[in-house]
Length: 295
Image (cartoon, rainbow, N blue to C red; front, side, top):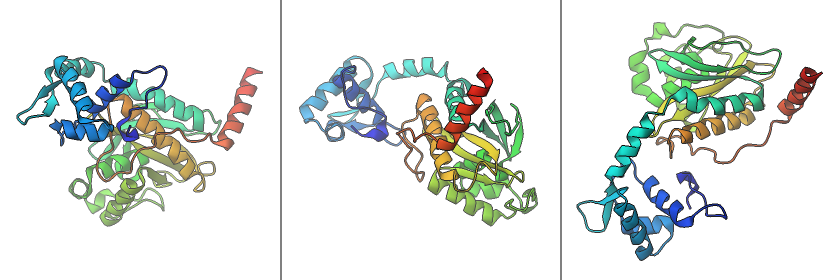
């Protein structure tokens, strides 16, 4: 099975044929609306006759239907009905919050969920860190997108044309000595965000504050939100950022999968599918903090 499809190999508690059928459904996308039996067989590593039986079974249940070409299928009407039901239960805060809470529990840093509104990243939810010294934030807070990690993710998802249409040079106010203040520099920074799969606010919004953001993807493969963690620069050090970023990206992708995402947009690195190792420094402090609270 292809791990990027979000499927797993059958084990004692799963039904292999069901997993293969679901894998076929995951092959469809906005750019790939019609799939032949041969392509299904190659993707699944099966003989064409086996792939044909799977597709026929899905077709008889209404999940697939034959398209214009022989041996080629498209999504069926049953999925439309299920999509309506799923759409009634897709509140982004409700879905993402458990993953953001776990991220905060693992790192100790304050977590944010945000969407873009024009030139700002709007905080939809906050999870308070457990360190004594931590960032304090609130739901509904507006942060300039060009100098916040959660905003940088959302700008990077839009691309250069949108960024240049959205901002004038006078909009890029220098908030700290580290703030990006030119459109060329902003475009270059968002390009780096896409290449590495996460954003860094290196004291650009506030001196002494560092933040790391990652994209939240919806069921259509679009980045429409972001999560981030924020903490003091003396704790969120440059050396620790790569390790912290692994946790932020993993949490973001798990939340994205819970929203129905199956792949990252073109140009972005493949998401992490294995939970990163625990952060030793955070584990030690958290254990001591929990012990103090119990006494």
